[in-house]
Image (cartoon, rainbow, N blue to C red; front, side, top):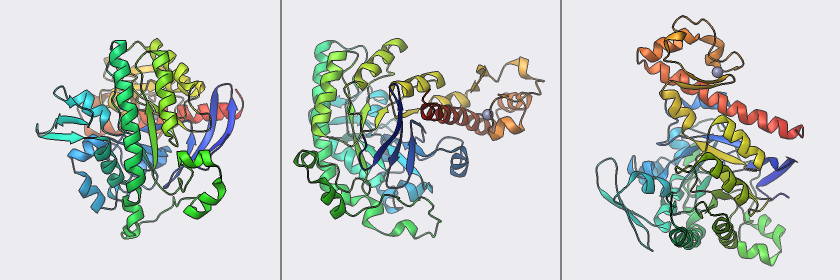
Length: 406
Ligand SMILES: [Zn+2]
């Protein structure tokens, strides 16, 4: 039940523990991916992210396309070199932000015209231009351009949207296959130009010829994905289909038919009740290949990410730990804490007595509360470090439980 870039190590019920090989790093799954919208996980330096054990972080194509611009990042050798992050990166396609940040967008078969939230200038994303941008940014994992179906939506609208997403997925894959060699870290040797220590060399580097020799199966050949996948960016497809189980099934089947090395479940956490999110995740997972990584986009609380991992999701991302931290909302083993509350003003205890992060080891609740009340930048830094640590530790525990067969 493994492919050459995704090894399944252990399953327990529906949960899976595995290892995903990307060009820059090996990722233990299930994994939580901190969100680094504009090539920065807000308030946290890269070396701290490494210390916290983050194996992969997210970048948002929409934001990076607008600022600093794809060409600037490409000239700097790609996102990894630009932000000095030697581990893995995933970029989204830009679709979600185009749909969520732009009320004046115009969708056609060709793509989406939208206005920049920064200066109101007009831009156009198509499957081809979204791929071009993501190849230029050079993340390890990139996403097909999709339409994130709004909620609620009537069945006819959901169907039309999933069909558009399927056509866009095919165009995304076609463009990627024709242009994947343009990724900055493959087309030049500038990645080592700054003399940085590269401790994350690809472990499974293999020539295209070797990959082809191991295939020999016509059907796999049609899907075309085994060839040197560990060397190139991995392009994932996205399943849509709104809140309708049958349409989710159909979207999954059509995306799988196009063929991708991994599959994402998109279009959730868009305002629907949490119980519905869970039901749709569970039913969609049944239709996804067991030997490919499954990525649930944009969820959730610590309890939810553990629950989704137990359902068989391999990868998740969410802005919640970082965004909540900046608002003084902290996740702990004893529940959620709002550090601004007066009751913590003289509390000598750690934020979370069961957390081993550097913040809980060193600072008191009273000090964290003071920093927040005084609007100190350090409050954002420390709060974010703790919340990320809590999320990453939650996933570590889930991986451990799966190994133990619990
Ligand atoms: Zn902590």
